Length: 293
Image: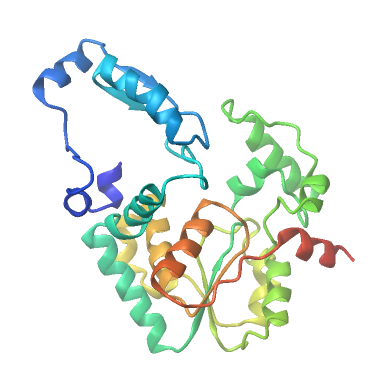
């Protein structure tokens, strides 16, 4: 839940002059919800302000309580009033602060890294679920490709079942492999003695797939190796673990995402908002095309 990751009181206080935020519904409205008078819906993706004025606001007036059950990419990026864009940035980069426990652990991880010199954060999206749902199997064995396909078919809510891995990779829609990112780091002339912090879950294929990267850059670290005892309360809580990676990504000397996903985009924006530090959003189609040859 929201409160498991973010500081709720800070969020409410930060936006008190812009939006009235309640921790729970007033008794009268809470009773309506308990009686079933609740409309739930996903707002249309990439909508402009007129959609919320003309479609959403009348529904709020009618039903009193409206549950927006999806919140990803529900507002257009461009063509919005400047005050809305400013509020969006304030919400994303000022009002959203992690819980004190996450903040404290994040600072400890960054402190350990800083004591050992410069560090690069790789947002290495090469986990099993990422590969299964994207259909990207380049570099995998036939058995692994079949395993990833079975995982995709095992989830009925995932609509895209048949995926052409080669075509998707050619279009730049696949994450870079650990082998490819080793080549990229060399091309960027990253010092091989720098710490390479892996911001990700368990890498599919384990040490076998990481061999090229760890051979070229032997100082590869993760939060689990830097602070093993401090993470015991967050084990099996992927969102809190991702929040720690987010904090480390913000503070890194260099941030390199290997896939153009949501976290990569938000980290890039956050770093531009507060800092002037290097971020390298990679063109996956260009890198993949190069490595194919």
